Image 1 (cartoon, helix red, strand yellow):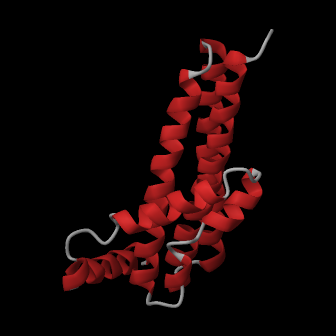
Image 2 (cartoon, rainbow, N blue to C red):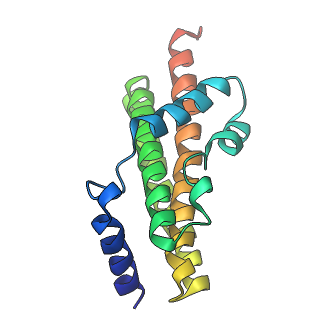
Length: 165
C-alpha cells in the first residue's frame, strides 16, 4: 500500500508542468546554497556544520504536500550523496591500501546502519503518508551528516601525508 501511495505521489509530481523534467534533480542554485554553507562553516566541527547545512533545501518544503516535500528531500539527498562520494574518493586517494580498505568497510557498515535507522521510521509510521516523508528525511539527514564527516576524514587523511612519522 505504501509503495502504491509513493508511486502515485511521484507520478503526480512528475506530471506537473514545472517539474516535468525531473523533480528529483538538484538545481544549480540548490547546489550553490549547500556549497556556500559548507564554505561558511569550514572551520566548524562536523556536528555544527551538519546543524547549519543539512536541511537547507528540504526544510522549507516540509509544509508542502507529500510529493513536493519528498522531492525536495530527494534533491538535497542527491547533493549530499555526491559530496559524500567525492569526499570518500578523496580520502581513499590519500590512504594506503590497508587504511583505504578499512575506510571502505566502514562506509559499507555505515550504509547498513543508515538503512536500518531509516527503517525505524518506516515501522513507526506504517502505511501512513508520513512514512514516505520521514524515511526520506532520515536518508537526507544521515547522508548529509556522513558527507560532512567523510570530508573531515578526507582532510585528515590528506594532512597525514605531510605529517612527520
